[in-house]
Length: 408
Image (cartoon, rainbow, N blue to C red; front, side, top):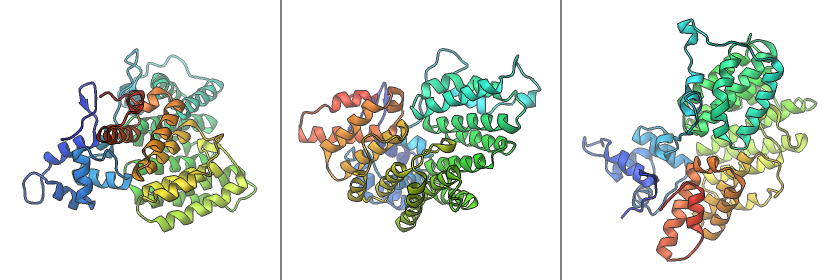
C-alpha cells in the first residue's frame, strides 16, 4: 500500500504522481500504460518504477526523473509537483503577477499607465536588492517587488547602462520563475533579458545570460542543448585572458554549466574534463561573484559533488564534499543545494542519520519559503520517513517534515 504525504488535500508523493500519470497514459498496445510499458519507454528499470509507485522510494536520479517525465509526456515540474504559489497581499504581486510582467502586451494595445521613469540610481539600488533577495531564497519578496520593477524598467530608453540593468531584472525574474516551477514564463523572461542586453554596453552580460539560459535548459532535461549553449559561450570568451579576472571567472562558470549538462546526459568522462578545466581557472581567480555567477574553488567542489550525484557515484560525491569548508562564502542557494546533494548521496547509500543531519542543516540555513518550494528535498524527507516507519524507530523526522511544509 502506498504511503501518502499531503499538504492540505493534495498528494505530495512522487510515486502517486507517477502512477496517476501512467494510468491516464496509453501504452503501446492501445490500452492503459503498465509499469513495464513506462519502464521500457523511459529506459529505466521496472524495479525503479515499482518502488516509486509503492512508496518504497520517494526519489530517483535527476536523469531518471527526466526520462520518466518524457515518457509520460509531461514537464518535469508536473512530475515533481514543484509548481508553487506565493500568496500576496494584492493582485499586483505573486506568481501570476510576475508571469504577467514578463508577458506584457501593452505595446500591442498602445497603452501605458506609467506616470514616471525610474532614475539610474534607483534602478541600480533595485538590481542590488533583487539579487540579494534571490540569492537568499526570498522568492516571496521577489513576488512582491519584481512585477512593478519590471513595469517601471520598461519605461526607460533601453540602451547603455539602462539596458544592462533592466536585462538583469529580467534575468532575475527568469531565475525566480524557474524556482517557482514556471519554466515557460522563465524562458520568455531570459530571452527578453538577452534581447535587451544586446543593446547594452557589456558583451559579457550577454555571455552570462547565455549561461542562465543553459541552466534553464538543464532544469528542463534538455541536456544536450544546455551543454552546447554553455560550452559555446565559454569558448567565445575563452579562458586565456588571464589579466581579465571577471572574464576568466565567467568562463569558468560556463564550463561548470557544461560539466553539469554532460553529467546529466550520462557522459561522466566529458564532465570530469570540464570540471578539471574549471578547477584550473578557479585556482587563478579565487572566489568571485561577477555577473551574478558565484565562482571559485568552493563552487567547483560543489558542482563536482553534483556531477557525482547525478551520475550515481555517491561514495565519490561524499568524498569530494569533505573539501567544502564550513565557512564557504557561497550564496545561501548554493550552500543549501550542496547540502541537498549530500543528503541524497547518504540516502542512496543507506546512511539515514547522516542524510537527516544534512537536511536539518539545510532547514536551519534556508528561509521557510525556500524549503517549502524545494521538491527534491521534500522527497528525501518522505523517503526517510518511510524507512523510519518500517524500522519502527523514533527520530525528529516529524519535526523536520513540518519544516519543509509536509504533514502526515
